[in-house]
Length: 312
Image (cartoon, rainbow, N blue to C red; front, side, top):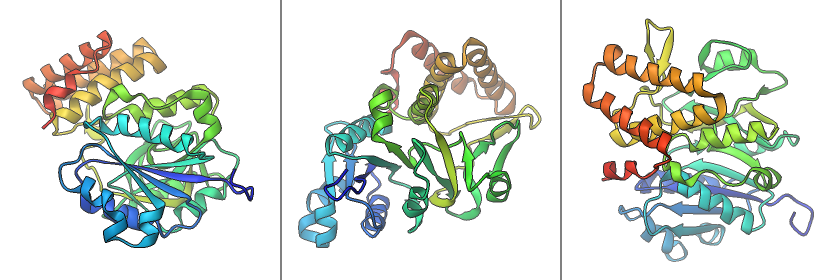
């Protein structure tokens, strides 16, 4: 707590080669009341992000230069490494609450205020909306106790209880995490690089008994990713296809490891079958099927270095 008993809230932003987006985000964050500091983790960007951050005091407003603290990593360690370091840094700087987000999203001006209206949670966040169409969710979610996946805010509002969707949160997109929870469960897995580190952290929090929820009236905007939740098996299932080999390699490897560790062998095997089906029948692609197999075998062996061959 700060000297006056107020909770110390620190935002952590992880960025890589998206200068225009991180500038937009930081410029929004400095206008939000209640934030004490904004820590920006630059994953060894090559687009001028590091220069902009290091020159804030000279080229930007006084508020921006005094409230924003940058740190540029020596190598690109992905979102997983960035959030690992950023969350540790925020805790070291005395945060009671840490507000975590990627560089390509942006909170609505009242997002933090609406999140803070709920003070009996451990890991909670806003509804993440498609920036191009705010009636849609950016990431489809499965509502608690239901088998259906929903894609629009109308369904979310209809399912809310007292303004919350309990047990559901889209991690690292404007989520708040308490210092007490970090003390209990530790930091995100840095070896995942990208994809699945956020889910692993959420599942770890749930296993520890954390109170998790989505605040329906708090909104965080994010570019829509239409490849997520691609229908398969005549619409009876979906698959998180990505045209990026890097993203797919990390998704296949990390998702299999998460399912094995938290949901058990049957769920992991089901994911292997889904992957084989998707790239054999839904979108036939022998090369992508082989990449998936390499990634999954690497994850089972505990090898989290194979993604490096796909880095630009």
